[in-house]
Image (tube, rainbow, N blue to C red):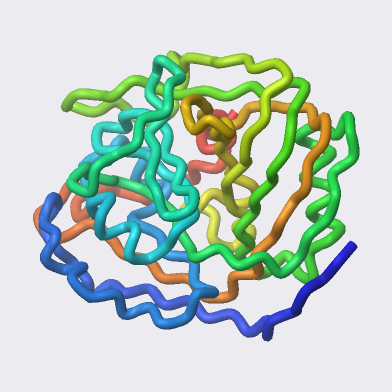
Length: 270
């Protein structure tokens, strides 16, 4: 194991509730107030997705001002998002990855500027659950955010995506019950995602939320399962969190978020 550097583990949550812009409006993001690359930027909340709030909060172009690495989805819950090396890809329900233009709307996403702090090899035969255990044992604390990148070859990779939805939007669990599953054998690519601490459950996805894209950048999706052939993991310690919320006039203002969505989120993620 090689630990390149252990950055200060002070945790700062900056919830910018003052940045409210109308859905579909880009004017609030002309300048990036984030100066620290160790910041996880998030648009909206996972509970908003659970309630079927799939309207745009930010555009792809503005999202990429806040990070070159990340995951999310697109307006209307149209497929799975992967941001890698500063480019944004959409895995549609045909399993194909499409490079997205800056004007496309985003209802939910997490991005950061990826700088690895910890690198380790992943043994052949390691499964998704075993990898989570390996990462857990390597983390200096469970109480900050981590960006996770795993590059390698997989004897098996199982992913999913969903079709874009039309209003009135159904809740997320209803959409994922009709998810399209893709099975890859002997595939090379990159896992992109995040670990979020348990205390942000409902704001973000507590635990691991990972997507996959092939080396050819032509296929992938939200990860359901995998088995490693040969891979290296890279972890970026990320101790700041910046959240923007949907603007005045959006359905977000009138939605009741008091229910506990934990079971539904687990169902939707799997």
